[in-house]
Amino acid sequence: MPKSLIEWELSTCPIQAREPEGGWRPVTRVPRIPSLRQWFRMSNRVSALSSILRSPTRILGIVLMLVFTAEVGVMFLLPHVMPEFLGESGTAVLDAVLLTMVCAPVLWWVIIGPLRRIAIQEHQRSETIVANASEGIITFDRQGRVASCNRASSELLGVDAADWVGNTTQSRMPDFPDSFQTLPCEFRINVDRQDGTSFPVQVSVSEYPSETGQLRIAIIRDLTEFERAERERLLMARETEALRAQQMATLAQLATGVAHEIRNPLTSIKMLIQVNRSKFADEGLPTDDLELVEQEIRRMERSVNSLLDYARPEQGESKTFPIQDAIGRTVQLIEGRCGTQNVSLTLDCPDAPIAIDGDVAQIQQLLLNLTLNSLDAMPDGGELSIAVTLDDSQVQVTVVDSGEGISETILDKLFTPFATSKPNGVGLGLGICRRIAQTHHGSLVGSNRIPRGAQFRLTLPIANPTGGASDRDPGAADSGSGDAPTSEKSCKAC
Image (tube, rainbow, N blue to C red):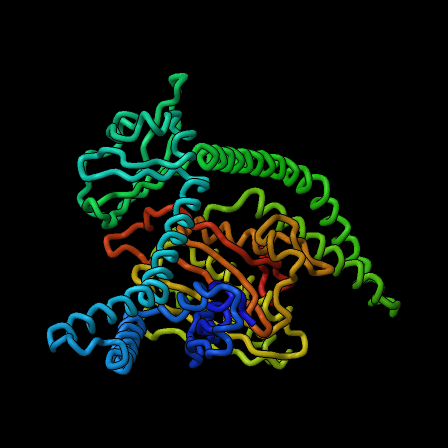
């Protein structure tokens, strides 16, 4: 059985149930008044009575019930105690005296006393919360005179509470506004320390009614640690960018050495193998091993070309062209492989041309890389869709597949060089795709789909009618991963 007001309210308050959308709704069960047996079993009578006094309607009903009961009792008692010599006036006075003597203590005990104790408890609870709050809390009137301040505000501002109460807020915070256009409001100011240094604070001001008029309450938060963390984050971001630039410079030097030391010998080896294949074929000797060696050499050449393209991207020829051209050529290149793998290809593209500025070959390379990645993820068949949508001054191309999705091991480091989950992958394909998107003042993001599959969204600005590409900064890619496999057409990103 409940033993206190809090326990009783917890047992009778509406239960909050979670809706499917994540919101909250009350269940149909409503608070109920304790039975007489439960009321007498409660250890705290004040708690029991205060649990009943939950609304003005209940209070009015209890008052009427008590007065009616007292009046009925007095009417039955009065004939037995009233002297015979009293007339009608004396009877009325005695009736009023008895009614007052009965109703006043009962009303105090049943209604006024519990409500007074509840008010005192709520006031003490509020005072305790404010006094022990970690943020500074002050109250002041419309003229800016401080009415109260808690311990945290005294420690934060370095002022004694007794000295500050009665003075203006500007006496300790000179940048504090004299008036406010609208309330509630929020702003930042700098506060001086005792040693002459200053620190930033965030102030939230609102208004509430009181017995002496409208008072305002200000909550003061110290932003020193927040701004220090923000500076550290920006510094780390700059260091990461500088490190990335250094890595790219090193990668460019490495790519130059690779091109000279590896690609040229590979070309010579491939030419010798081709000559010997022809000679072996003329003599009727098996050439399977030579074909395998030649295939591996081609794979090594593609890896070298990917490294070169990533380290030293080519500057394409920029012009205005319909994005449908690049999409159409990409679809033509993958249609054969879709049929071989039993992949259903769906294209949702507006008929009206959507012009963009850039290099058509690079955009086609980007789309081909994305679609080939999707086909690699569906070796046993599936669904591949390419959707084109317009969003204000941008066009979005979304490539969605029903494959296995992006591996969780590389989901957080997508578009990072050499990040791949493919056994024979290099991990540079999507990095090149993102760079192409950024070069065209766009962005490329990727994510997993539920229940399975992956999607990549390419966003590019629509061509300016006056000519020239958009002046916006290149968008940063959020997530995505993978690299492109061998293509039916020569694709250096693969």
